[in-house]
Amino acid sequence: MTNKSIDGIAALFLIIFSVLLGLNQVLVKLVNEGMHPIFQVALRSTLAIFPILIYCYIRKKKIDFFDGSFLPGLIAGVLFAIEFILLFTALDYSTVTRVSLIFYTMPVWLTVAAHFLIKNDTLTLNKFIGLIIALIGLIFAIYQPVTNYNIQQFYGDLFSLLASFCWAIIAIMLKTTRLTRSSPETQLLYQLIVSGIILLPISLMLEDFIRDINNQIILIFSFQVIVIMCLGFIGWLWIMSKYSASSTSSFAFLTPISGVLFGWLMMDDVINEQIFISLFLTCLGIYIINKKSG
Image (cartoon, rainbow, N blue to C red; front, side, top):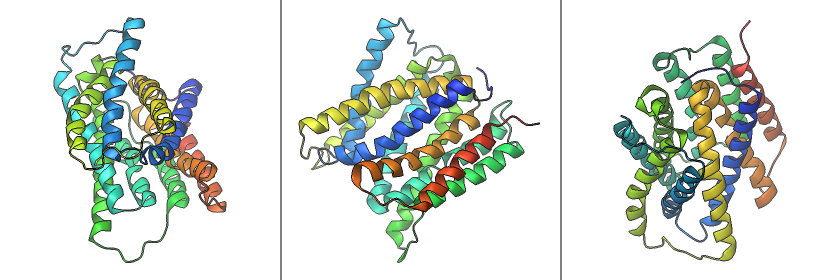
């Protein structure tokens, strides 16, 4: 396990992956027309297992659930399931913009936690300043004044915050537990298998778990499973195993920004100078976080 700074290749992958996650926010909305969001997550986790197993067989990747990582892997899978239950429940109570803003504060919690829990991943002045700037940029992108704040809005904010904590805890576990012995493919399988076992029965209890399926929705959903869940997350876990956790997680700030841009391109959402300011601040923040000191 290493905690080296992000280099050019890693940065390029993380940018592409963050953009894909932003695109995924739009794709989820489109697929929601055909299936309930929780069923979508459950089915995506379950179906993604099989391409990963095929990939591991072809590439002769070793999958070992008994290398001492079973318990932390089980916990990571449970946290993965809880994270998405909280996230999608939050969307029932609150707006997408507020949920996104609070959920993607995860790099802040991870960077602070890494300072205390991960060796050689201390909170430097560059990281602190970069996080503040990137967070301001994110707020510029998706902040909207809220009126008539009520108990439902409070629950939405709370669930979003707890979901971001779950995400940060999983990232910390990948760097501090025996999951460090596991391959990225094994780490991902833990999360997919356990979350699928938990979420699929829950989703099938929903009255409208199937809505209006068509070929376009099936195609979009297949792209989510193969490209985003399988290829994307395997790459992200590999990056996490090689590079600084706080530097890696800082790129998560790009996801809601790209989500706003894809919303503009694909769903005619409004975009203005506020978005361009946020893009500048977010990119500047990420640059400062990953800039080598002195």
